[in-house]
Image (cartoon, rainbow, N blue to C red; front, side):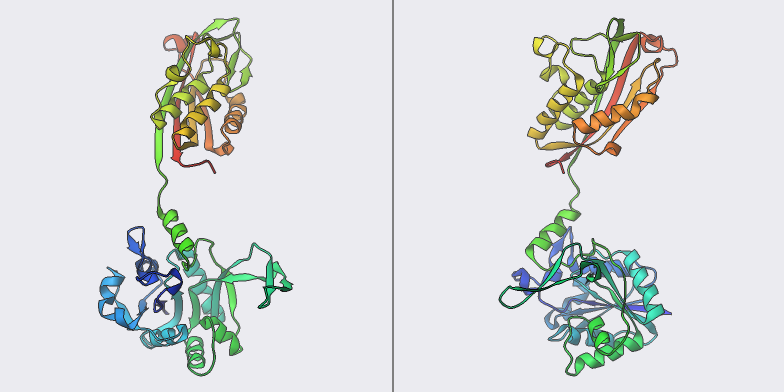
Length: 385
């Protein structure tokens, strides 16, 4: 069993309104067309690839498609989509028992979608990937008056690649070359009375049609700017002070000595966040010579720090803290500490990690006379989601 694919790129993308055909626009260093072809070129189940281009681009087709691991046939398209698919079908080798038809404007198709389409096509003859509509769908007349509200649970949004056993696609192509009009080959198969099954598509398998689509696609390929900072804090433990970590008080005989509340978790995180943002350290913003910070809760200082880094265009993506303490054990309190930190910084709980260690009897921490914390903060450029 051999599988061929027709990548339809015969249109000119007039809705994007630019001089360059849509399929040739840059998308993260490669064109939309190149990304679409690459999705099938690297798929182990695909034996042959045919690319349909506008007539004037065929001569430079090899260059436009770019390097591939298997030969790619390039043919000229027609006036309508169904004409372009018909010309592409003529170039599919006869040994291909299954033929997929894919819009070049869908550059993010994944191997899992391709697998599902091939499997369903072998079983049923024609298969279409689709996703359920999340919105209520209204049928509207020419005057923009709602004529009917359609049952949302029965509305699926079709994608490509659409799969066909060879004889089914040939039948659809012949029908399309007569008087039938359709938006895709699956619709031609429907008109011929053939059963068309739907397989699960992928929300990421979007079609780039408008400027907004293009901007969103480019943004999806742009990795967020990241900064990583580290922090460390240590306090001597003395009698008569509570042991508070991120607002959680631990049952202990002694607590940290300090100008503020001595919360090593928050203080280490503050330094990590400020370091990642290039904003100095805790002493610069909350000096122990300023009475305003006398006994200040660590969570309050942490929230103020989040505002400082936000002013510089950053927000916290994740946190990791290691507390070094001989006693009491941190483990029973780790979830509560994590949740307090997550709420203070508007994070999901799994974006925060708390670990407890002992110092194995070494130095002041190991003797139980001090507590320390090491922290790592990851910041992302932009506003918090």
